[in-house]
Length: 135
Image (cartoon, rainbow, N blue to C red; front, side):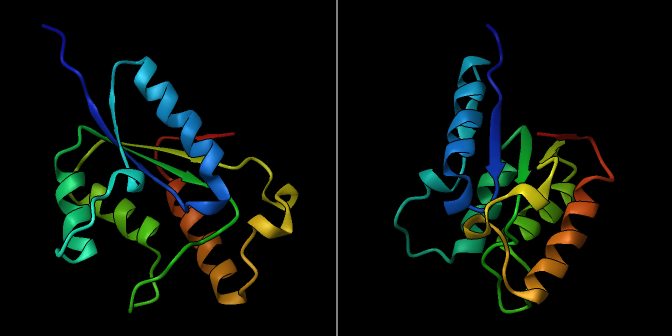
């Protein structure tokens, strides 16, 4: 019996809906079980606890970074970055994909807040220190 891997897909959402769909399709074609925010149920659990449980159950973690830093928690860290750091901490194999030319991303899909822009650059740099591919 062939093992089927579960893969957590992390990214900002509204700006990357189509890209997320393509990654999900590619994972399904590879006989993997994709896991991501699209599949979060309505639950009484706090969101971060639920996300950590899902990541813990995954064999791989994929992050896609483009023009937005994303929704932040009380500490000012985006959920995408928090998930990424958690996957690293748990030693889950991580695959990163970063946009090859962020300057060409339309303004409506780009970070407008100066603090968000700064954090996005730092997060993008962090992702690029590990296995990473531009798209």
